[in-house]
Structures are given as structure tokens and as C-alpha cells.
Amino acid sequence: MIGLAHFLTVAAMVFAIGLYGVLTKRTIIGILMSIELMLNAVNINLIAFSHFITPEALTGQIFAIFTITVAAAEVAVGLAMVFRVYHDRNTVHAARLDEMHW
Amino acid sequence: MNELAYTAAFFIFAAITVASAIGVVTKNDLVHSALLLALCFIGVSGLYVLLQADFLAAVQILIYNGAIAIVFVLGTMLTRRSARHGTNDTEKNIPSRVVAVVSGLFVVVTLGVIATTPWHYFGEGVVEDTPSLIAQFILTDYMVAMEAAAVLLLAAMIGAIVLAKGVEE
Image (tube, rainbow over all chains, first blue to last red; front, side, top):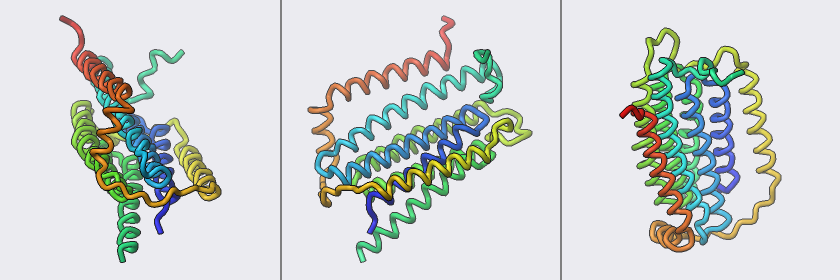
């Protein structure tokens, strides 16, 4: 019997993988991909809770729609910034973008 | 039999999701990472189908696979350097083993919390027609939030154009 705990387990694993990627990746694009993994884990959690705890209200699914909206906006702005940084500095490595690092 | 099929489908989609997520963070080539990210999104949308969120499964495939993964591939191609090393290496100065152990500990702690929490299930309420219900909610109770999301998308679009193109003129 597949229950809520199974879905939460998958979401926790995907979130931890995304966390690892955010902390270890060299390029900004790799970090953005890992952030997307974490947002997907959150969406799985929201929809699983919506399905098992409040099946009629659908609140979790509507929350997930807004999360997807914010994720799309984040990717658009983030990749535009990556293009800009690449155009100006000729690199996308996060460690070399240290002008604001005192 | 139905139960068995559900269980098998869950484990297949969960395996696809977790395995391709691991591939995203461990592959050294950014294009491979982007394609595995698309596969991971497909696995997640399969999980949504199992959770009876059919509208969100379609939205997941349309937005994440159709837009976000493609934009990632495009961004990879436009910022490609001469690849002496891999394009998606892990940072040398960061102890990645320590980070892996910390992430594993995070999973263990979360699993402990999940196992010890007493969940109160409210039955298996079968919702047949998710899209129309979601549409009703979005256009009545959550209308202000939806308008805010629309403004956010517009602002993101303008910001992305200005950032990527510049404001020389």
C-alpha cells in the first residue's frame, strides 16, 4: 500500500540531491538546475499532502501552480542574468564572480 | 491487481525521478545534466498522475519539459567554453564528500520525522474533474493571488528581456 510516507520519502531524496548540487556545482547553470530539483521536491510534497490529507479542498495543487509560476519566472530571469554575466565577464563559473566578495 | 499495478508504477516513477536527479548533479557535461533534468521532470509528472493531479501532470510536462528544460539546453549551448574540463564539474575548493554526507544526514533525519509523525488521513476522496475544480478555485477564492502571479510573470518577462538584451538605446 503506497501511502503519504512513500511520496514524502521520494521528495526528501530529490530535495537532498538538489541541496548537494547547489552547494557543489561550479557553474551558475548547474546551480540553477539543482534549484529546480529542490522546487520539484516541494511540489511533490504539496500535491501528496493535498491528495492524502485534504482530498476535496485542492489547496495543495493550487499552491503547486503558484510554485511552478515562480519557478518559471526564476529560470527566465536567472538565465538572462547568466547570459549577461557571460557577455560581460566571459565566464559562468560562480567562483570567478567575486567582485562583491570583500 | 489494481493495487499491485499502482505500487509498481509508483516504484518505477520514483526510481526514474531519483536516478535522473542523481545524474543531474553527478554528470560532468552540462547537456547531459539538462537532458536528465527533463527525464526527472517526466518522472515527477508520473508521480502527479498517481496522486490524481492530472492537470498538474500536464502542466508539469508542458512547462518544465517544454519550456524550462529547453531553455536550460539553450543556455548551455550559448555559454559553452572550450571544454578542457567538463562543463558541469563540482567545485574543487568545496569538500563535496562532506556536503554529500550532510545531504544524506538530511534525508535520514527527514525519514525519521516522516516515520514518527502520526498522519491523519482523510479518506481516499476521489476527485474526478480536477481542471474544472482548480479553475473554480483560481477564479474565485485565489483570484488576487493569481493576478499577483500574472504580474510576476510579466515583470519576469520584461526583466529577462532587459537583462539579456541590455538597455543601450
